[in-house]
Image (cartoon, rainbow, N blue to C red; front, side, top):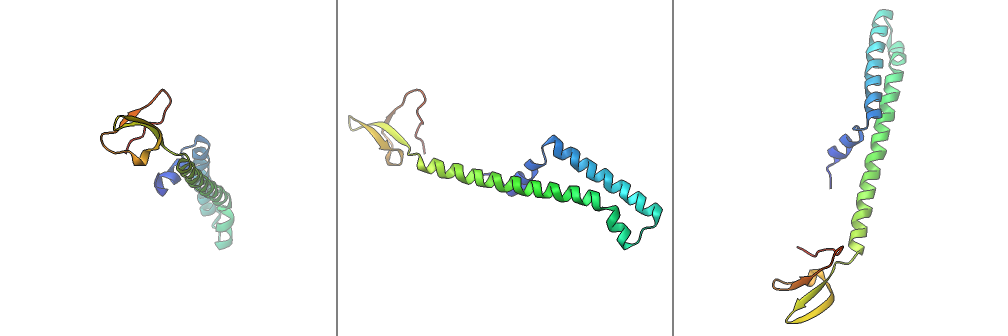
Length: 122
């Protein structure tokens, strides 16, 4: 599967998310200059940066939910793959055996497959 960093980075590839990041950065810059010109105190500082902080908080929450959903979907897919048996039609010792579990294949077995069949390997 993908690393946690890749999953997080993937959440910020969306164009709308990138626009919101840019808006948060611009809002932060404007808030900084507004605060500097007004000579804001501690309370004014917080009020100045509410908008960019709220946008960033929403983006972080969005990324968290996106990573959680990706991990959940990945786990579900792996569980489904385990439920689906990997069977093969095999020629062993001159006899065709239909529906043999792929994990029982040995070197020297001849595998028969048709279009659309899952090919058992490794």
